[in-house]
Image (cartoon, rainbow, N blue to C red; front, side, top):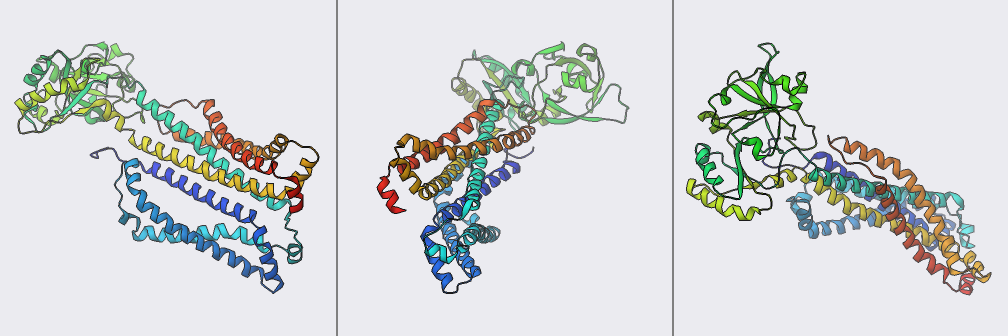
Length: 531
């Protein structure tokens, strides 16, 4: 809460870490699928080695070792790509990582662990699969392994597409939530509000004169001062509401303000009145609270709160007005009880005046007004550089972590879908090769290209449909859990699931159709001769 700027959230780093782990898992699954699908190329090698006395354990060790070497080579290529793409990533994620950061001792240890783990995981199943071939059957040309291996490959494909669909759904929901956060009504005006940081400047004590000069500009509607940016953050002050024992002071969220605060931010009074400018009694005797505070203290109504004692360390104030609730912080938290306390004593003004808020007319671009404000600034504070912030932009920055994570998750989701599609293509090629003779006979018997394409693609679309059945409840649970971290949530619409499934299914259908078309247009004479 007290950092110079909004930091990333560790939960989002973990999310991206999980996505990266899923990509690695899918890559391992693809390698296992493709290695077993290409078993025909090495079956005779294995058969000959077994005839000459090679043990199954040594054959398995050979395959795992080969996979380790491939994984090690992949790690070297990955590090080269990191070196090339790190500037792009820094710009994309708004971070400043260096190549030296990648080669820290802890990271190098993790790289070694990943190489060993991935190499062992990816090489074990193909090693078990290939080393189990019986030499006599292999040398006779019989490479069939029954339904068990076919089931395993299909299971791995379903796993890949399940992960892909879940992440695509989660990405759509994340972008929808981000858009909701940025467009939601937070209860105050945030557009066309210019915030001038004035701590330590002459404006702190010359506020009234500076405000008067600003209001001479026809494009400036209202001016006020405050200690924190409304909608971004707030302070906490000690108060003792009426009814509390003398020794039980409470900390409540609060903003220290100057006159015209409610007018500047377009916050309506729902009971009582606003502060009266230049009042002799309001700064010491009046206080404003919101509707949430009335409910929190158990007072019967907004009107019933008027006149209630609400003492602070500065004096014995009373409630003179109740204003409508607004979000003093980000939409991750609900609207809380809030106190607005006007400050006009010199020591209070010096301490609490952090920003001067300038509201400009709707439809007027800030670029039209800023030169005039800059000119006035130079008159009052020539030794202080002119700085300003737009309140709407500062509120949007509250969700930078969500935006960066959403963009990265979207790219990674597309990458997962691409890798899963490669796995499906490998399986399609393997099954089409296994059914070469069957397809040749069907063509000789008069089957059309369309019929054969539908025959082959139907089986793969069943796998995608099964993936969707598994992915939908998992995705629903994940996005519901994630949204529970926000007090204000977007709705989870049916079209998000339909779109994610349609995208995955469409890509799968396109890829398998191309491979099926290739198999369906093969010369049946060559197919039968091949078998």
